[in-house]
Length: 161
Image 1 (tube, rainbow, N blue to C red):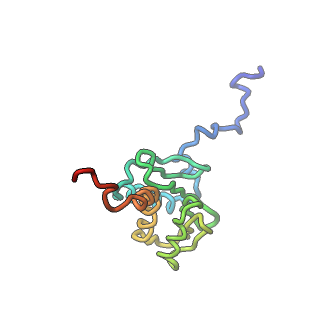
Image 2 (tube, helix red, strand yellow):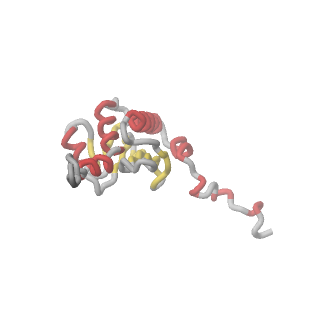
Image 3 (cartoon, rainbow, N blue to C red):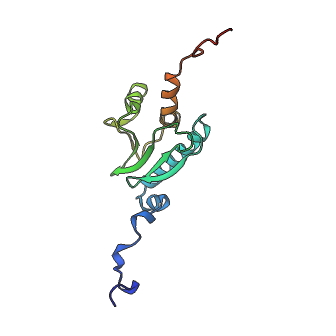
Protein backbone atom coordinates (compact mmCIF):
# COMPACT_ATOMS: atom_id res chain seq x y z
CA UNK A 1 0.00 0.00 0.00
CA UNK A 2 1.77 3.08 -1.22
CA UNK A 3 1.30 6.22 0.86
CA UNK A 4 0.59 4.54 4.20
CA UNK A 5 2.66 5.06 7.30
CA UNK A 6 3.78 1.40 7.12
CA UNK A 7 5.80 2.17 3.99
CA UNK A 8 7.70 5.20 5.35
CA UNK A 9 11.43 4.69 5.09
CA UNK A 10 12.91 4.28 8.56
CA UNK A 11 16.00 6.29 7.63
CA UNK A 12 14.04 9.56 7.43
CA UNK A 13 13.69 9.89 11.19
CA UNK A 14 12.31 13.12 12.60
CA UNK A 15 11.86 16.11 10.35
CA UNK A 16 14.48 18.81 10.95
CA UNK A 17 11.92 21.10 12.52
CA UNK A 18 11.34 18.52 15.27
CA UNK A 19 14.99 18.41 16.33
CA UNK A 20 15.42 20.01 19.74
CA UNK A 21 18.31 21.77 21.42
CA UNK A 22 18.50 18.90 23.92
CA UNK A 23 18.73 16.40 21.05
CA UNK A 24 21.63 18.35 19.55
CA UNK A 25 23.46 18.34 22.89
CA UNK A 26 22.79 14.62 23.29
CA UNK A 27 24.39 13.92 19.90
CA UNK A 28 27.71 15.64 20.67
CA UNK A 29 30.64 13.32 21.38
CA UNK A 30 32.34 13.38 24.76
CA UNK A 31 34.30 15.38 25.95
CA UNK A 32 32.96 18.12 23.63
CA UNK A 33 29.48 17.55 25.04
CA UNK A 34 30.65 18.25 28.60
CA UNK A 35 32.42 21.45 27.53
CA UNK A 36 29.40 22.65 25.53
CA UNK A 37 27.05 21.98 28.44
CA UNK A 38 29.41 23.99 30.68
CA UNK A 39 29.32 26.83 28.13
CA UNK A 40 25.52 26.64 28.05
CA UNK A 41 25.38 27.02 31.84
CA UNK A 42 27.85 29.90 31.71
CA UNK A 43 25.87 31.74 29.02
CA UNK A 44 22.58 31.34 30.90
CA UNK A 45 24.13 32.38 34.24
CA UNK A 46 25.83 35.38 32.63
CA UNK A 47 22.58 36.47 31.00
CA UNK A 48 20.75 36.23 34.31
CA UNK A 49 23.43 38.29 36.09
CA UNK A 50 23.81 40.95 33.38
CA UNK A 51 21.61 44.03 33.67
CA UNK A 52 19.50 44.83 30.64
CA UNK A 53 19.60 41.38 29.02
CA UNK A 54 16.22 40.05 30.12
CA UNK A 55 14.93 36.61 29.24
CA UNK A 56 17.17 34.42 27.11
CA UNK A 57 15.72 32.23 24.40
CA UNK A 58 17.59 29.05 23.57
CA UNK A 59 16.98 27.88 20.02
CA UNK A 60 18.71 26.22 17.10
CA UNK A 61 20.21 28.47 14.44
CA UNK A 62 22.19 26.77 11.67
CA UNK A 63 21.75 23.58 13.69
CA UNK A 64 23.70 25.07 16.62
CA UNK A 65 22.49 25.88 20.14
CA UNK A 66 21.91 29.64 20.08
CA UNK A 67 21.13 32.22 22.73
CA UNK A 68 19.03 35.27 21.86
CA UNK A 69 17.55 38.25 23.71
CA UNK A 70 14.07 38.43 22.13
CA UNK A 71 12.35 40.67 24.69
CA UNK A 72 14.97 43.37 25.17
CA UNK A 73 16.86 42.91 21.89
CA UNK A 74 19.87 43.93 23.96
CA UNK A 75 22.33 41.54 22.43
CA UNK A 76 23.77 39.80 19.46
CA UNK A 77 23.10 36.07 19.14
CA UNK A 78 25.66 33.77 20.75
CA UNK A 79 25.99 30.25 19.29
CA UNK A 80 28.04 27.26 20.43
CA UNK A 81 29.13 24.14 18.60
CA UNK A 82 31.65 21.34 18.40
CA UNK A 83 34.15 22.31 15.71
CA UNK A 84 36.34 19.29 15.11
CA UNK A 85 38.40 16.93 17.14
CA UNK A 86 38.92 18.42 20.55
CA UNK A 87 37.68 21.95 19.92
CA UNK A 88 34.45 23.81 20.52
CA UNK A 89 33.56 27.31 19.42
CA UNK A 90 31.52 30.21 20.72
CA UNK A 91 30.24 32.06 17.66
CA UNK A 92 29.32 35.73 17.43
CA UNK A 93 27.80 37.71 14.57
CA UNK A 94 30.65 38.29 12.11
CA UNK A 95 29.50 41.80 11.16
CA UNK A 96 30.00 43.08 14.70
CA UNK A 97 33.27 44.16 16.27
CA UNK A 98 32.84 41.68 19.12
CA UNK A 99 35.63 39.24 18.26
CA UNK A 100 38.00 42.15 17.51
CA UNK A 101 37.17 43.54 20.95
CA UNK A 102 37.81 40.16 22.57
CA UNK A 103 41.18 39.95 20.78
CA UNK A 104 42.14 43.34 22.20
CA UNK A 105 41.01 42.45 25.71
CA UNK A 106 42.30 38.86 25.74
CA UNK A 107 45.00 38.53 23.04
CA UNK A 108 46.66 35.43 24.48
CA UNK A 109 43.70 33.88 26.28
CA UNK A 110 42.21 31.87 23.41
CA UNK A 111 42.46 31.09 19.74
CA UNK A 112 40.10 32.96 17.48
CA UNK A 113 38.42 31.94 14.24
CA UNK A 114 38.56 35.07 12.11
CA UNK A 115 35.96 37.59 13.20
CA UNK A 116 33.45 34.85 14.03
CA UNK A 117 34.42 32.87 17.10
CA UNK A 118 36.46 32.03 20.17
CA UNK A 119 37.94 28.54 19.91
CA UNK A 120 38.38 26.44 23.04
CA UNK A 121 40.09 23.12 23.51
CA UNK A 122 37.78 20.73 25.34
CA UNK A 123 40.52 19.60 27.71
CA UNK A 124 41.52 23.12 28.79
CA UNK A 125 40.11 24.82 31.86
CA UNK A 126 37.79 27.73 31.02
CA UNK A 127 38.74 31.15 32.37
CA UNK A 128 35.17 31.83 33.49
CA UNK A 129 35.69 35.48 34.44
CA UNK A 130 37.12 36.40 31.03
CA UNK A 131 34.55 34.34 29.14
CA UNK A 132 31.69 35.81 31.19
CA UNK A 133 32.94 39.27 30.23
CA UNK A 134 32.92 38.39 26.53
CA UNK A 135 29.47 36.78 26.74
CA UNK A 136 28.09 39.81 28.63
CA UNK A 137 29.49 42.11 25.93
CA UNK A 138 27.75 40.05 23.26
CA UNK A 139 24.43 39.86 25.14
CA UNK A 140 24.45 43.66 25.60
CA UNK A 141 25.95 44.56 22.20
CA UNK A 142 22.89 46.37 20.82
CA UNK A 143 22.06 47.93 24.18
CA UNK A 144 25.58 49.34 24.44
CA UNK A 145 25.39 50.67 20.86
CA UNK A 146 22.05 52.36 21.60
CA UNK A 147 23.42 53.88 24.82
CA UNK A 148 26.51 55.16 23.00
CA UNK A 149 24.27 57.06 20.57
CA UNK A 150 22.15 58.63 23.31
CA UNK A 151 23.31 62.14 24.20
CA UNK A 152 24.54 62.56 27.76
CA UNK A 153 22.54 65.69 28.53
CA UNK A 154 18.99 66.85 27.89
CA UNK A 155 17.96 66.91 24.25
CA UNK A 156 16.74 70.49 24.37
CA UNK A 157 15.87 73.18 26.85
CA UNK A 158 12.19 73.71 27.41
CA UNK A 159 10.86 77.14 26.65
CA UNK A 160 10.43 79.26 29.75
CA UNK A 161 12.73 77.27 32.00
